[in-house]
Length: 492
Image 1 (cartoon, one colour):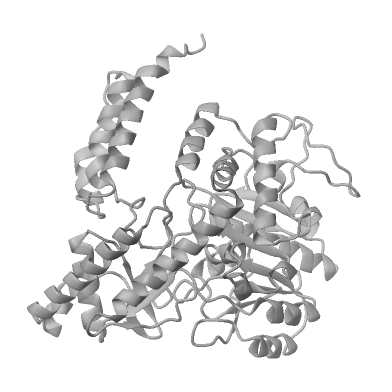
Image 2: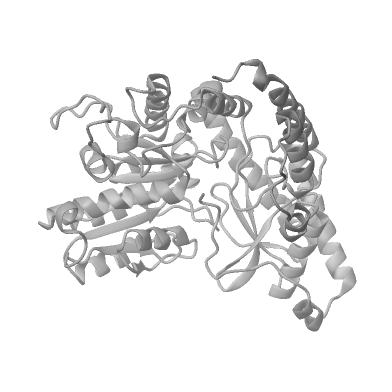
């Protein structure tokens, strides 16, 4: 017997109540979780209870258990790991997506979800100035969006080299050379492992992490065969982007496929104020970005864009007797099925919150969102420069700010104290062979008050550290955040 509508009512009412309580707590609650995972695991230990439990009671139990272990990532004072907040329309749309429970892989089966995603795709291409005929897929995040673009590039360059990847696999194929900037995000190396392409060839960069086209040209000239060039829109430390037009011209002269990793930085192209940093972007062959960063839709939502639909659909398309495929011929591909554009046959309609976010913002609002995030980054940088012993290390060209507090020891201690204070959250990293505090401005709700409170939190952290006058041995005994040589931001 099918479930009756009123079977959901009480549980949904309780979920709404707890949701309102969570959202209402964000302006004032500490950013960090109050308990760690090990503590929660101990509380949760034990066998599955033998008896059933009313759905509403389950929701109450869930909310009470989780609340102390939640981080206030949607807060306007959260600046860690390039994590966005959630726009109201996108949050509500995501609830509807869950209620509708559409498996959004086939256009025939879920026409509403497919058309909403197609509409959102067209809006994205227009906003970002990318080719209107490109295929857009909605992935779990930028990791898989990069996977899509680089998988399409692998297919294309091997086909041009006369190798049938679908028939013969990678064993015995020509080596695909992949060129990356020295400050690319680590997720690119991860995706290359997924694709069996091995370690990339590293290209020199400038002081802000921008790939040098002259170095790229020299390395391309030094070899031959299939090649992919991976460029970056938005260095995770400086926010700077590679010189797109020049680097793309160099790559294409050598017959390479060009992919752009733009998890957050690709959104600079939406703003007249910042799009000059990405001049020539539309000449690439594929692009990857996140909607759960700059656009502020709920997790998880990445966006893959490929300029050659016929290529990406050969990589990810499935043709079986039981699937009702979208109409299209080799000469006229048509809109295609969603499953032909991403590595998932089954998935939720994650492009619908993108539609809702863009529909709520409109063109003017989307541009204003991008500009506001960048303005808040500049305001944070300006305020930090006024603090004694603080140096802003990067050219603040978009939404990233990197700060040193004079020495690695002081920087680590200030970062620790800031995290312990928990009224604002900024994450540690390592850049140019020194420990830094990294600030990523990604939340639509961050305002001038949040900026002022966050600057005050940094000033307090500096004062506590300086008053303690901690020596090196104390620093060694105190747990510190990890500072990898090339840190990563979230790419779910």
